[in-house]
Structure formats: C-alpha cells, structure tokens
Image (cartoon, rainbow, N blue to C red; front, side, top):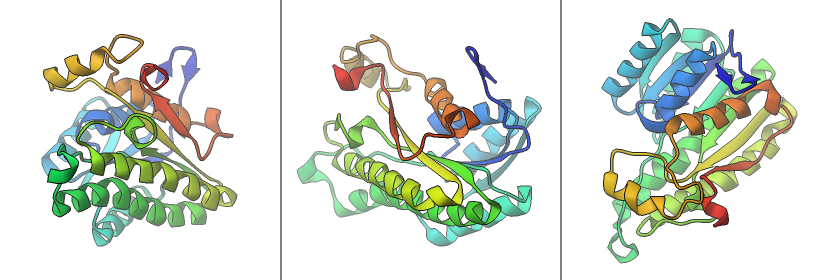
Length: 250
C-alpha cells in the first residue's frame, strides 16, 4: 500500500486485528492485507469476522478469522494460540475491539460500566500481555492500541465509561511500552475522534467542532496505524497519536 510518498510493505509478517469486523478495525485489517501482511481477523461477531476475512482473500490477500470475546482471558488466550497455529508467529497486533454505552452518569448502570471497561481496557490488557509474551520470545514486534481523544482531551457527553476506558488504554499503553521496550516491542496508541459513521445525526452534530470541517474516515485512522506498525516508526513508542482533524486544539 502506498500512502502518498510513504510506502508500506508487510510481506512475510503476521498481523492480528481485534474488533476487525467493522469500522476502524475492518479498515486496518484490509490495509494491512493490502500491504502484504497475513491477517488474523478477530471479532466478537463470527459473521463479521468471516466476512472481512473473505473480503481479504477475494482481493488476493491471506486471512483467517476467529470469533472471540477479548474481555475473557481464556478466550483471548485461545485467540493467540489459534493465530500461532495458523501463521507460526505474531509480528503485529492492533487492539481495535471496543464498545461505547451512551448514558448520563446517574443513569449508567454497573453492568454497562463493567462491560465497556472489560472490552475496551481489559481486552487490550489481555491481548497485550499474551501477545507480548510471544513477541518477546520471537525477538520483537509492534502493537497499536485504539484509544480515543475522549480519554485525554475531549470527553464525550454521556460517555463516562467510554472516556474512563480510553484514558485507561492510554495510560496502559505507556506502561506496556516501557516494560516491553528492551524486548524489541514497540507499543503506541491512536486516538481518533469523530470518524464518519452511519449515524447522520451524530455526524452533523460533530462537524461544527472540527477545524478541518469534515469527519474523518476509518481508512485515515488505519493509515496512521500502518505507519506506527512500519519500520519508518522504529523510534516511536509509548505515544498517543491524535487523529481528529484538529478538534483537540480548537
């Protein structure tokens, strides 16, 4: 894949993308495959995972799919083992699995609070810990965690659980990057905001806050993720990169 004058080639590398059934996760899985990586497509929805893997194979890429809830450590462990069985190695991990529950603080129930943190934060922790162990044994690798501007600069209304989970992902990313640095593993976070969705009301509501006066596309976030996974970013680790059309500086 060519991003302007920046060329990315992941031929011979194996990449895991969690939450790859739609949105940014899907765009990232497709972009990695277009760049030559063998992609292990994970999603909690088996139909979505299978569909994306088939899309990759249809364009001549290599992909396998695996349904797992990354918030369950046993399921996360099975996912990592399945990928090793399929490809024999893990070079790239993109933790894109995530959910959001819109509710005012006083109406947010405990189950929803826990579920958002379980998937967004605990799932990232489980996969990072498990994949990190494998990467350390193999001599290195790279991970990118999907966070959000909501976790550091722009909390969204009625999104207490989401903001807390993404703040946790950012803090965890920095500590994980420090811990794994001597093992040759780089770990960064990407913080998108206001990415184009099927919800036309939310799209219109958000547009006025963005200096670039447009919504971002999932593929634009995927491009940043690809850069961070590439050798061109070999001296970048422990960072939270904003992809928000300038909203955080407005």
